[in-house]
Amino acid sequence: MKVVILAHENDNHTTPLKWGLEQAGHQVVCWGGLAWNEKQRASASFDESDRLWLGAHPVERGDVIWVRRPQPAVHNPNVAESDKKFAEGEYRWFSYSLMYLLETLPFRCINKYSASRFINNKSVQLVLARQCGMNVPATLMSNQPGAVRKFLEEYPGRTICKPFFPHVWQKSDGGLAATETFELTADQLPGDEILTWAPAIYQEMVVKEYDVRMVLMGSNVYSYALHNPKKALDWRQDAGQGLVEVEIIQTPAAVEKAVLEFARRAGVCFGSLDFAIDNRGEWWFLEINEQGQFLWLDDFNPKVNMMQKFLAFITEPPNSKETLEQREHLFPSLAQYRESGFSATVEPEVNVGVNFISTE
Image (cartoon, rainbow, N blue to C red; front, side, top):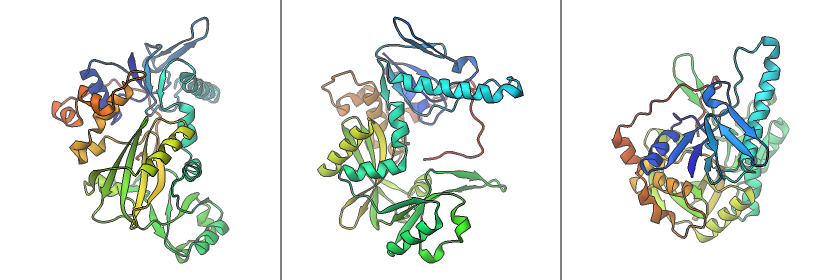
């Protein structure tokens, strides 16, 4: 068995986790996504025994595929201008074919590509969460000014606005500007046309005591209270400045049951979930990121052992009776990775040029 990571080797989670797997004696292959260069080419053969190659590496029965963050397909830049649209389409559809093919072959996928596409829809998340018994704030997703104004009238208490996905802009002065969740009242709404510039998520505000970041690994649910002295609506910016404390906590039985049912219906076996805890101790579901960042928890609290738990999870033998806690000692910690001074020598890979920075 080898572990195939669908992400560039210099991804901020791929590098330490690849190192940890190799330290424990596992073979690891990284493939950043379909492209024209030799390292990122692919082949799928269909005959008596279906076969798949990603770069120079065959993907074989029993391998584990971690669908971390494969990049969009990139065609050869030397294609004639008149043929570029055709080449883009062929690369895009071959890339999709590969992603969906993975879950039809005898590989373990974390997560299946179809499930990841499905659950990355925030509307789907909220509906499934409520169906599974979780508390979900009243929510409107819209670019219709009338609907937005009506929602804020119907929920005259505290309401918030947040984007569908995080986004960071590079400013002309060299600084950065990032999307954040913010409180919004009806009298703060701009003119109707501005409300059509970008759709947004409008939500009843949960007045919270603290946040919880939960990590799902198969049938295992790990919860961590995030204590932010500033009690900011969005803790991510403060976490980036080291202003958040991470505390290991127990997950209420009812919440754990609902989360596992949610995962079953969504078809995912791994993900990072966010909850807000109100002053009555009620847990309110906010969202799930099926490939969200998780190693940062170890930096904030070394007792979390998230890196070791995840490596134990993705290498877990079929029908294993051991818990992840019983197997996590087989792998080095994130602190050991930091202390090793390891710096991967990574060959350049083709990537899509983008004018924004993606963050969790």
